[in-house]
Image 1 (tube, helix red, strand yellow):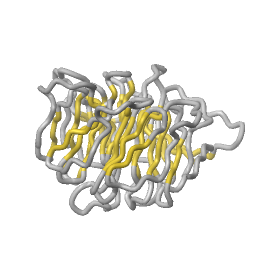
Image 2 (cartoon, rainbow, N blue to C red; image 1 turned 60 degrees about the vertical axis):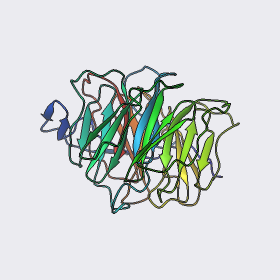
Image 3 (tube, helix red, strand yellow; image 1 turned 45 degrees about the vertical axis):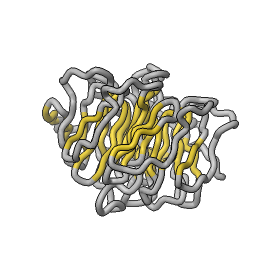
Image 4 (spheres, rainbow, N blue to C red; image 1 turned 90 degrees about the vertical axis):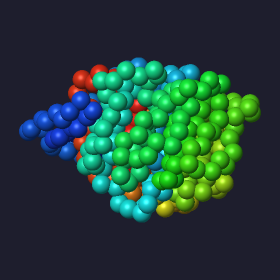
Length: 330
């Protein structure tokens, strides 16, 4: 097990050249500079992320999630994202609690922005061709991909906190560890079992054969995928908010609300973190770069932080109707 938290290389942009969302396109010209800073000991970073409210996020295999029970925002991890999985990611999405979707270097397929929702959107799962959004009640909204079912009208013991996909169907994960499968085989869950800390996210394995659940205390639960270690039982500066699986598999990452990164397995190298950087807004999720071994971190105000991965833009610095709850690469 390798546990490292140190400062890394960040790429920041205040405003995107083109921002696409469910309510249309917003164009900003003249602000397209990418600021890359190498953080050293004692260096303070300003303007990293925004909104002060404390929420967390977690990942699912190719998407995101949100924990309505604890107020923790989750993001889904990333596994084999559909037919031809493993192709290089060209960019990423950010998703907001009101269902707004913001695309950077990837096609905009639609959103729930401006539409009435029974419950807030808590996650997103992408595949080649489109994506699914999931609400805390398990309602699923599909854009460019088929609808395979939901728990939107089913009473739940615990709110949905994430969604993950193998590229063919999807799983929903709940804060109590329950798993609901649609178009994909059920591999097990923590539903009905005593947990030390709630589940805050989930991620499909790179081969799509199974999945991981991530708890706020750093606990990791593997189902038909190899267990590589966890932070369960160890002291954390801030709670875990999500996790993700690199495109090549053989490991996974956990991310904390302060941007600390914990890597497990030979396939998940450490490329940097925000663990000792003062942030204006908590980190709510992360996504892997399919074009390498890097990753992106997403802040609740829409800020994006790049580690050994290309920066494509962000909603950091813009006024949002609803906070960002996660992001995903595609």
